[in-house]
Length: 344
Image: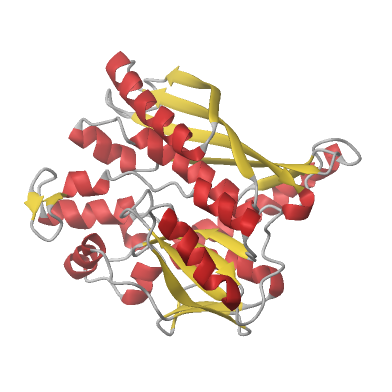
């Protein structure tokens, strides 16, 4: 089984993104000489626009994806709001910006006040963890757009702010820099299309799985970890050269920051693989390469820093209650390698 066979061809999606970005960048000239002129091409973790006062506004939008299907099947909606905030906030901080504001868009085939209130619980909790204010949003009832009465979609849009001189775009990454990984809380919000097809073929959603210590549904709904506070502290107190949120595309995402200086990454010290990923790989007979380019494999975030800073970064995240560890190093040769396998 592969992600493409499950319905998501990452390579084709990437090509579409590149073509779309070239077309969208033609709009940049509408703000030339004005507040809001883009200061970086489309393709990083967030869009960056100049505020003409030495500060930059960082903007990002993302969704919960098909994790919302698991919430529907479990009839449990009070955590997916955390995922929605996390997918936006964790990407914003990869630019060095501080997340400040959030908006949500909830589409429903049929209005259900109970579901709306449960989703709001998660949104509020996620915003508190990320230090953001939820300043508005939109709830749309669109029965003709969604396929059934239980149909839902949840999307977030977030804004962050930072000084132009503090932007973290990857241009300071150097050969020999250390890669420090921060543990995920599980599958997070990516690869669920593939995970569901494999797991629900083998298990009932509420069936307790001994290797997980809980049901498949509970495991898949574990909220995405939010890394905002320790990452901001690390960038303000320590020397950090790059930041990467490990989401769709998994470790291949590192090329977003490595590509700035045409370097690569060698990940050769991965921690023990969490049970959920071992089960998915075994039951789906998935290759190592496919796993490393689809799932976070227990690593939700990566910081790139000089080797002399590595221990201090690990200690900082440990104080915040995160498990941090050395993953590998930056190399001159292009490409992202995990255990000697190119994944991008």
